[in-house]
Image 1 (cartoon, one colour):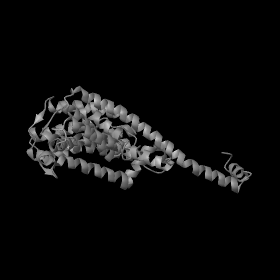
Image 2 (cartoon, one colour):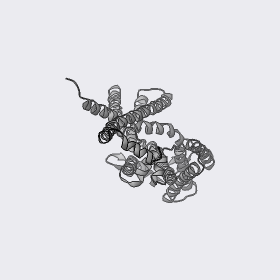
Image 3 (cartoon, rainbow, N blue to C red):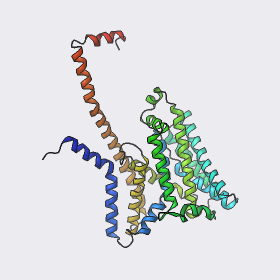
Image 4 (tube, rainbow, N blue to C red):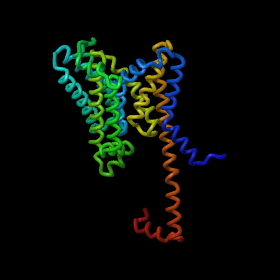
Amino acid sequence: MTVSRKQRRHGDGFVQRFGVVIVWAIVIVTFSIARPDTFPTTSNFSTLLASQAPLGIVALALVIPMTGGDYDLSVASTLNLTSMVVAVLNAQHHMPIGEAAVVGVLVGAVVGVVNGVICVFGRIDPFIVTLGVGTFLDGLTLWVSKSAPVSGVSQSLVNVVVVDRFLGLSVEFWYLIVAAALLWYFFDFTPAGRRLLVVGRGREVARLSGLRVDRIRILAFVAAGTLAGLGGVVYVGTSGSADPSAGTSLLLPAFAAVFLGATTLAPGRFNPWGTMVAVYFLTTGINGLAQLGVSTFVQQLFYGGALVIAVLLSSLVARANGRRLRRAAAPIEETSKEKDDHEDPDGRGRRDRSHASGGL
């Protein structure tokens, strides 16, 4: 029995949308068989889900400007700085933890404003700007912390991030899920989210459509910085301390998760739920390899290789979507041409319209 073209397309679409989810399930089964006493346990999975909240938040922060066609290489450094600001203000200057957390989030928002204004009004490539700003923030973090970890953060923050639980999981996991849900709602159900999607698909077209492209891009950077600031608060709450260099290691896996997420659930588009799947797919692999006793350097190999493969897959998916759209548009164009030929077989109407428009 031959398979119809429609059935093949449906099957290809299913694999494309859920391929990463299927591979993730295979990875879980494989490590469960290899380490049945430690990997498929409740404690391992609860730790795995909860401990990745800072990485997930950084990845979600990246999704916002990347949806608008921009890059932000400073989000991990922003998280690192805000976590240090919260720790220093609370542990060394005895500021109440609530106020210190608000200051940390505001610091993230200010970084976003700086990125957006320089990129948009300076007409400078965001890659260069955010790389420079991120490096500046790393130096600022070392200065604020005097190049040493800061401990002694209020236990109340640790309680609301790690100690408190809901449905058996630390609250920090649910913070991440709420952030992903809000971002999904923003992109799919709000005019502002739709405008950002349009800007990402073509700035000139968006500008000609009447959208305020510059303002939208700046707000995307501000949102990314603010979310990274929130990530810094969660990050310092996971251990009750801040390390001046620990947060910067999140940038590479966050980019890998964002690009890999663009190949799943909503292929060809940066999306929050796909990013979450990719975050936990990558960390599941790292967790399983660690339990197998693989050397720690494999983590860098794993994340680096995942980023290259994710970018390649994302590019292939985008090309496939482009070809699909062109194939879908071809019958419409052909039908329109046949209609014109039927109504005006000698082409006189088209020539008249051409002369009337100046021959263009």
